[in-house]
Image (cartoon, rainbow, N blue to C red; front, side, top):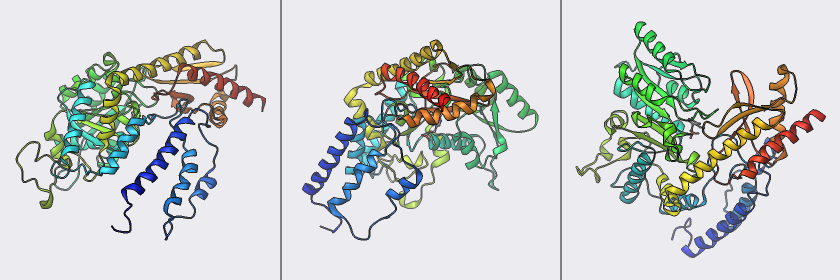
Length: 468
Ligand SMILES: Cc1ncc(COP(=O)(O)O)c(C=O)c1O
């Protein structure tokens, strides 16, 4: 046995210690401050010793507890950003994925895990109304979006021989930053992204999209792809998917749907996502609204040939020698990554344990919590609603009779104070240049009482701030 190996019994002892820590951590979720107060200097100091030359043995695990105590998400009242709550059976799936350490490259390297991922992808596609789509797991929405636009480009406007790609990409003004980043990374040219105005509900306006496409065509440019968002990060808006798909079809554009935040909610509210199945590609994050531990992004697409056009660069050492459609299959021919962990395993285990119905119900609960917050904000004097619970994000601010000119500054300071109090954790959104508080519900632990706590904490922090 090499010096890095542990006996299986020793491994089990360490695993038991980690399980005990995990149990304590989960038990304490509700009572710990959501945002433990730590400054940059203190968090850097925790790890200032760097990596040791000589191993510490079992004592190495002693540092885990303080590390875990410093964590910010998972708590039922952590409502910032869009980040799932780390469903515990999914955590165990991650553990097993590391124990067996299968490399999800190709069937011949990891037959069971490749078939498992293909099956989970098919099931998720069908659960959100995209029957027949295939795809793969990815690090997250950002890499899924990048892959989707790479597929669009290689299908419709492949880089010319000088390597200069061309084409214009359209997305709403509320698009997530991962899309401009993807456009830049693909070398499409930052100026070739058109941000289409939105309507009063923050959705892309199809009339404005049609006009932008016509203008570009008239200017001799090549419209390439439109990105519709199914759940914008600020307000949860779902772009009019059917209308966008019709324009995409009419003008020969690739239609990608960025559903990183929202698309999995189509499992529970299919009527809010009509037209999702018309997309050429769709990204959605199981580490957001399927409550899985990160990282767990998904890219789905209608036509695997498009993925192969973008990603199949098989070198000799990796060439499949098997014509069987399953045994010759390689994920690296249809996605950006080569070596990667079995992300599908946690989803598979977690859904096998709870069942899809339980996830649909958890998503419905999140939406009901958002609607509850919307109602409470509407009825509470001193609060002003800015965006209602289209999905599960709500934007609002404290006004309390303060002059309009000072509201952005007051609410900025208010957010810091709310989060410092440690009972709820919110984020912010800038809408039409103004600052708003934002709560986003993608957490299976959040209860109606937690929603009431949000309003209570906002008012209490505002009172403190006004008195200070
Ligand atoms: C709409 C949307 N798209 C893309 C992303 C990026 O996803 P990820 O953080 O998994 O890269 C996010 C993240 O919040 C998002 O809300």
